[in-house]
Length: 628
Ligand SMILES: Cc1ncc(C[n+]2csc(CCOP(=O)(O)OP(=O)(O)O)c2C)c(N)n1
Ligand SMILES: CC(=O)[C@@H](O)[C@H](O)COP(=O)(O)O
Ligand SMILES: [Mg+2]
Image (cartoon, rainbow, N blue to C red; front, side):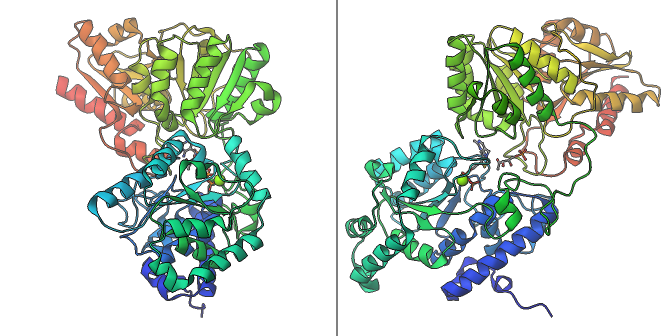
């Protein structure tokens, strides 16, 4: 019979109250085993979640949840929190279709504060909660858990600036593992490194003990904290003072983030403070599972894997990923043109730029989790005569729409925006689907927008974008490409010219990006029923090919198909052109409807949305029948 686990008796954080430090440490081990057992099947953010287990166990053992609020930055480290807050059984469905989210999600649990997924927002949300607490006159605790890389994001800095000034009662736990997805970058990272290098855990712990002994538990209860607590913490201050001290935030010495007793000691102190405090916790990404410790970057976000070896379990790919093709094509462009500079925001591997970074280190920039900085800097580089290519995930680019409009488009700056993960991304779900970029690109004057339909088209699109003056965005999806033959040399695409990939007179399917493949497959299905569809690879979302649209209007039905929101999307652009041309042809726009799309395999999501071949064919059949 399997030994009973402590974890099996935990249905909420209240159950942690009866456990001592040793039992909590055993629980942390069990949680790690559960995380590995589940993610080996489902995939997930393994290394970050393993690294944060002890912090979460220690913290939640001290809180009165869900009254006390914990805001998880990105939320990719919150698996232990899920397991402690009534989702032990549901955890097996992590990131699956209809299953629980890989991030915190208030609709999933009252213990989750916000829809996490995008970095650096937790401190702002915590300031709002702390302000609400002040306004209500209540005393619930507010805590934000944020990683060292996310702390460098602009939004986090803005929140620190505010909380220090307002002296808001909240605790920031900085989970410092020296890692972003890859190695962390930036001056703040160096600052944290100096602090770690100059501190000595043992001395710091002795200082903490002395402070606690001086005050004693009863004294702590009476002190009113604030000032006295600051004095206590100052006894542990180390030669390199944390920069946030000067903003009015009390900062602790680095604490061992895998020592539950030490974590509980320091957290119980700061939780009683009436102003902002930052607890500097040092952890190791992947702690407790050797393959993740050895290769935290691969285990940052992984698919299923073999527990014994850590090796990925996946089917062999039939084609390279769009990301790989983009990375190689950009390196080729850089080899031809010394002015090409690549910029990414903490996604070097994710955007396929590792080889570029190795080959052209002086022309490669990783700004960290700082999308606004990436675009602002690109505008400056363009003004300085360079040809910046900013490679970001479509969803994270949402942060920097203002920089696209004001810093790039108004100036007509020569900046190429490569939007990776454009469209549905699968298991990460609604926070990560890249479904808005066609709208926010299309709406801005001076911006041209390309949506290549396969990897060969992507190579041409990048080459074309680099040859054009002014800002150009191009978008391509996550994962395996279509298996198209890659060109020996890239070609220049005619601006605003689509290409017909199949002839037919009954209906015209005007498709954008990889939806061209789905439209072609739909046309094949319909042809078997005697319905002939013209299929057009629109190539350009802006400018649209008005001649091709006029020709499409000569059929009995126009259907646009895009992998983005229909509201304000490419299809609506086509409708505007048809209206201007005075066309009476029935027209339908297919794409992401006006609701957030959940997580799951992309094929399954397409089917749900009527964007797969059967769905598109069904729309054509129904609409043609109605038009008769
Ligand atoms: C705005 C935004 N940009 C980029 C990302 C992608 N991303 C997710 S986690 C991560 C690294 C986070 O590092 P850190 O905050 O130190 O947490 P750790 O994983 O090390 O625990 C990045 C870059 C994101 N989620 N949001
Ligand atoms: C948490 C986060 O934002 C990233 O780790 C993201 O999940 C990466 O997605 P990809 O797997 O598509 O690179
Ligand atoms: Mg980190």
